Amino acid sequence: MPTLKKSTPDLLLIIVTLSLLAVGLIMVYSASAVWAEYKFNDSFFFAKRQLLFAGVGIIAMFFIMNVDYWTWRSWSKILLIICFVLLLAVLIPGIGMVRNGSRSWIGVGAFSIQPSEFMKLAMIAFLAKFLTERQRYITTFKQGLVPSLGLVFIAFALIMLQPDLGTGTVMVGTCVVMIFIAGARISHFVGLGLIGLAGFVVLIASAPYRIKRITSFLDPWSDPLGSGFQIIQSLYAIGPGGLFGLGLGQSRQKFFYLPEPQTDFIFAIISEELGFIGGSFVILLFALLLWRGIRIALGAPDLYGSFLAVGIIAMIAIQVMINIGVVTGMMPVTGITLPFLSYGGSSLTLMLMAVGVLLNVSRYSRY
Image 1: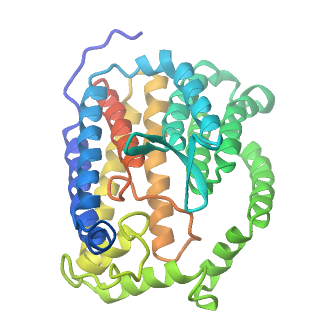
Image 2 (image 1 turned 180 degrees about the vertical axis):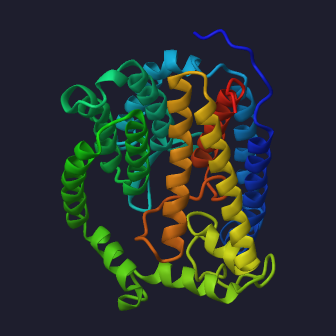
């Protein structure tokens, strides 16, 4: 355990995170009010729950901000085991809850948790420990790369049994970034990349709905009322937004055109109501968060802190790129939420906890 003097946490990172959270709360209400009024007779139904999740997440963020980050190194193996147990439990009928064809949730009272979301952070903490202890082997294939990716792909396989390709892709992408930063050889990645691409093709071909998502991404108008419906409605939201948008609360697509717009496609509603300026502002906030995360990682006092920070910022960045890529029609639909903005308790709480860890690393960083 390093003996270092603490400083104040990164204030700009806190401001950016809370700003994204504030935008998210406003837009969750705006995007969901019509649907919530129709389904629950309460236009604030989703907004109130999101506010509760945000409150829990903020408390967790500030608590974790004061927990020395190397504590997670000591507990990473236990946390990983717990997440593996939860990933197995969610597959058991009667324990796991099915939503939109995926058995990804475990009910806890009136709420539910998504174990795959917490696996992402547990895997980051464990992999950072593994890479710190075995960095001298990372350039070797058998002793470095294969053991590093072994547990990652076991977790990915369990997540795919739900199935949840989006969350699994974010987790694998995050871990690949961490391993690459640790010094793995590009030639090894090329070989594994070809194998991974073949596996990805098999995963897509094994499920008809995934094939439809790929084809709808290439030409959504070939099936406008089926697999291409969400992308088309998303583009219909973004297009009329123009430079300044239709105005806050003035979205047309949230009137039962774009399915559940408060979740994966909330960026479409932001672009429709707040226009190019509003969408660019959100992207700028994410860019600032990425910049602060990179600086924290570069200034971390030890390898574990650096790898931990890299993993967290890579997870957020990959998820943002995939979500916005899907919403703008540049990528197939994956079911990935937009960090801090989309409705969802597990995702929001996990992201705020991750920022709490990053803030603690910033307290020791020299930048």
